[in-house]
Image (tube, rainbow, N blue to C red):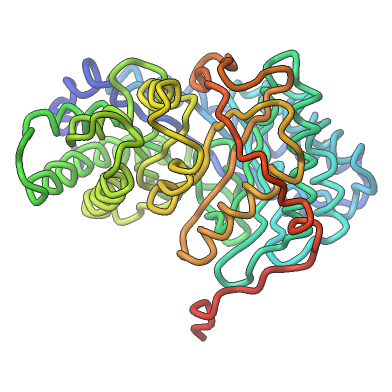
Length: 454
């Protein structure tokens, strides 16, 4: 049983080490809303979201007050909109209207973000999928809380390179339409390989078709807690290091389990999963890069960084699964550049390059996350970066993602300012050699041989 004593034991973690529940995310199926008439579809979607989520924010705040646990965000994820809008939406503009409905519903219930403006195209695009993808720039430019994702590959199906090519241009167009805000729209767009159905974190959250009508998923984060725990075992061997991370992850996950169960009970909605992800924030001391330094690296990006990240990711997951029977989502360590002061410092000093960051994504939870590049970076180059990251996920049977931001009007040496949890991002240099002929081939990269396991 989880009891209040376990929460009291974590008071120091909360007050001094930046432990928080990063998000309570209510997943909502919109399949029952499907209609061939766009007006009726919008009305059904708005009504369903505002009915099911009407108490989400209030319940989150009540749990915060009663248990003293910060819950940073309250969010919603919905069924991929390319599926929901397939019958009614005949143009990208129709999908934009649906995005505005999602934004309006999110504002009505008071959540921070709503995810699921998404398409799943790992083996090919339907007409609806393509229309939604083409609508993404305008949808993200004219809404405030809508987040978008596209899954372009999986270990079982390979990579849809037509979609990869298309998305290079979509990222560029999104950057242009939001250039007055340092191309902020791109911070709300993620391209995935092996996307999970139950991820509570934005911008990649959507409510998968394998999920129930509605579920509560909770994301917990505590890089500062892990850092403090490791400071107490400086100089110890790797066995001690691993045990310390596991025990800390166990305690963090128990806090998330308590919040998830309470939210589920009060809302009358089933509990889904705990996502234990060491997701940093711009706050001092809440950094994955600083964990590396406590482990013994001079700076993130130094030789040994990938090994340190692999160790951290694995031990976090091992500790989490001992604390909850339902650990899911993206659980592990995130390495978003803009949201981590230590990572920002590593980029600014030249210790961390895009190539080293890509190597690190082979062993982290997600991939290239919140990476800002020069605004002049071409669409084909962006597609090439996406393709590289998707290939890592496909071959290694893991989730990988790209959230890349070509900041229009800025170049290497400058900084993009996003504010809030998104922080700031130094512009990283990109390899200038062309991959355009490769990306232009089109078609599909087949699944790897080890995917054939039936």
